[in-house]
Image 1 (spheres, rainbow, N blue to C red):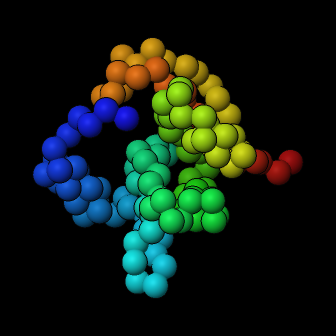
Image 2: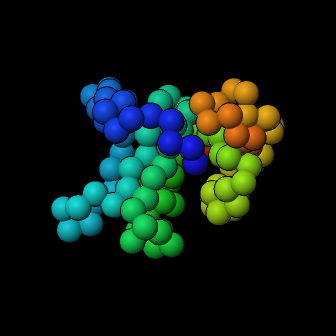
Image 3: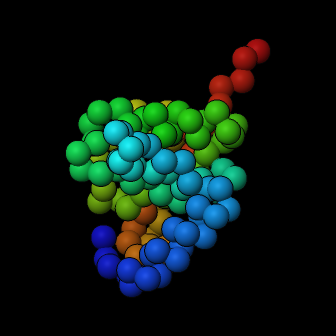
Length: 120
């Protein structure tokens, strides 16, 4: 991914998200190993420490987000095959593709949506 923001800008954005209660953190032994940033229905980001990948931590964060909304959406860079596979396995459906003009990175992206199942 392109490095678009200074470290100070990234810290300020994360602080704002945290202050607004939009961050869910995953910890192991009092160390942050991942977090999910969720604003209403939109997942701004899901980030995991390399040591936490492939261990179900991301799925736990997504499952927690699903308890807070009936619908979730996010965008993933088209070239990120690992993320696209992860979200598909978590029940997200591809609804659109973009040319990158609507994101800061200017990279083609995939728009994913998850909706809770309604029991009849």
